[in-house]
Amino acid sequence: MKRSTRPVDWPEDLNAVARTIGLMMDGRRLNPSVLDRLPAHSGAIIPDHVVRVTHIPRSAAYPAGAHYEIAISGPRWDALWSFRSGELEQLAQACSPSV
Image 1 (cartoon, rainbow, N blue to C red):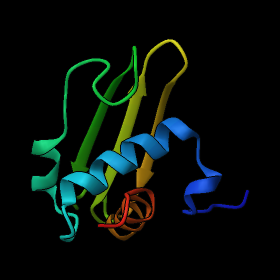
Image 2: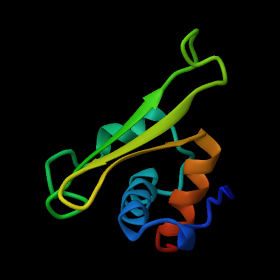
Image 3: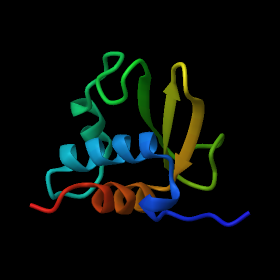
């Protein structure tokens, strides 16, 4: 299966999450503190859905390294995506409007 980080290849709802992350990055690099600024209430990013973005630090359970997980739950989606930091940063930058 081909894996791509090009925004056009991802569902629009995932692009909406990446766009919101990009806006919260505000031109800076992605780091776990950005997640504190993401709107957390249901429907804030995707109508009728709960979006959770989590930073998973490197540990014995995750020896391949730190990564981010995006979970979307609602009537259209009940899915989880996993990204390395650089992948999510690139996706967020590509989905965010240029300033």
